[in-house]
Amino acid sequence: MADTLQRIVDDFEKEHPNIDVKLTTVPSAGIVLKTRILSGDVPDIINIYPQNMDFQEWAKAGYFADMTGKPYLENIKNDYAEKYAINNKIYSVPLTANLYGIYYNKTKFKELGLEEPKTFKEFQEIVKKIKDSGNSPFAVAGNEGWTLNGYHQLSLITLTGSGDAANNYLRFSKPNAISADDAI
Image 1 (cartoon, rainbow, N blue to C red):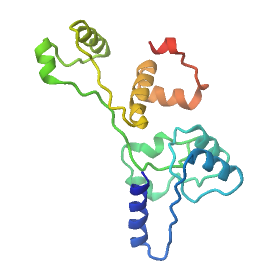
Image 2: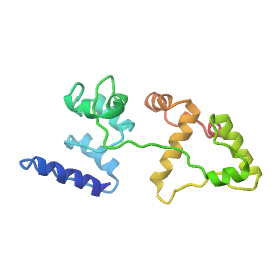
Image 3: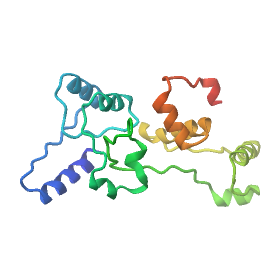
Image 4: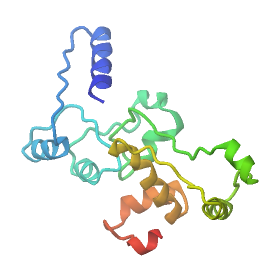
């Protein structure tokens, strides 16, 4: 991410030659950021997930500028800034958005006589049929740990019933409130 952020800084500085931006990246960034903020050394801009509990608490405590109603928010698609508002105030704008999905092998589905599922129940039935045929129903691109985040999010959405419910769960629940038994 550091290379991408540096390109953003470089582009910004080209458009605003009188402003110098210092990009700082460190190992254990969460710990360093927490230490800086708690000591009063708050960076001008941070890159952090808006679902992060520290971010939410820091926003409530007044560490960040309220951007609610700023004209540049009109450039953000799909109301992403509003979706992560804290107490109806906007403290973050998205750098990126992720889209998750499940890909399937059409050739293998045809070979096994399967059709694309339309419901979660159909999905579960297909998984069972694939397993019963002696095939593995899933492959995971997990060489890097962050890629597994999507599976965690998908499981939380499945357990709570929707993306909105999952976000509300994360925003208002106690950590570890879902037990391993709930995930099975």
